[in-house]
Length: 268
Image: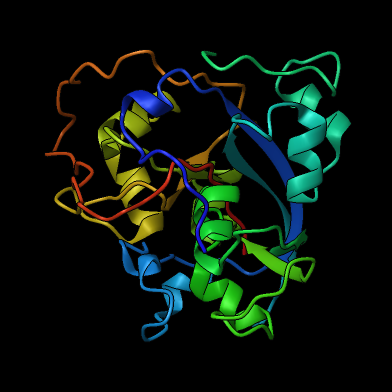
């Protein structure tokens, strides 16, 4: 049975700070497909984009990749978040400018990990509530042997997190990292690009195989190309409309799906 939580709204996610996490993983990069809202149909036909970002090519290499995660109970300190996501707590604290890894971050401000099933957990709630969309229920079903209708409390999940390496062309163009960003209510491609100081909307559209008119959804991830390591970014208190860039921006669809307040994170 699903846990009872309030439905997600714009105000419920206002001012929640974004944590950055740095991971090293092995992958050869390519352009990736945006999941859209396919990840909401856990038992439907598996689309490759729902299972994780793809690795292609003859040469596999390692790279540093960054993920975002929104601080929210019960994952509010660098230590709690690092434990959940299989990262180093000291590194999480350092990159976010926090001295004590056990300090609570006040609200208002294919790397695999292991997760122990708790009462009320389902593949859907673990992917979208606990991991905030950094994984998908389809990816969890593909990686774990448990029957979706009969998951035992205490079972151990393998959770594939979504992240990717820059392509050779991106590296040649000055891109050093791809950051996995969790889309939330009110986001637009143009506002996400500006948040990470990217003046060219194309740089955000290309690695996600999107157009300027594409619709993006909350509880999904986008790859953000970065020329340098990211610094901590807090969620804006309000979301004033931003002027368009060179082209029309894609806005989040107002779905009527029953999605719970959640936290998100990605990896390949």
